[in-house]
Image 1 (cartoon, rainbow, N blue to C red):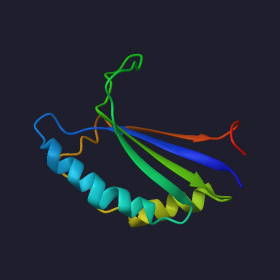
Image 2 (cartoon, rainbow, N blue to C red):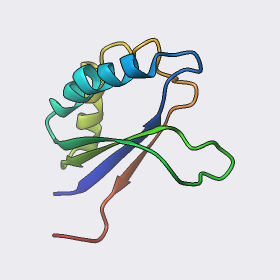
Image 3 (cartoon, rainbow, N blue to C red):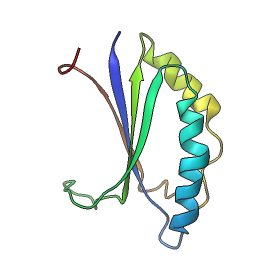
Image 4 (cartoon, helix red, strand yellow):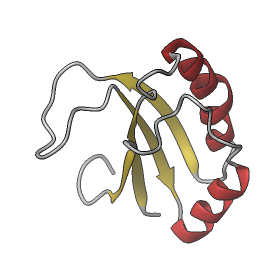
Length: 106
């Protein structure tokens, strides 16, 4: 079965309450996504060093591990289970990447 990761990079709005945003992320957003069939794990990280050409380093990173034969169905279920984003979530600077595993532990 194919293995994927969804890497989400984001942070609070310039005047947002970072503590409230992180509470929402941990208590609402991540559990919603972890309830999706195929999502095997969800982890949240605080960035401290890195380089993104042409962009600022975003303060937070989340990694979701996904195992599925139908990534499109997982994506549809993710969208269906998402609640409205917290008002302090800076959607204008958020980014995400999907990647499929091509090597590593089998």
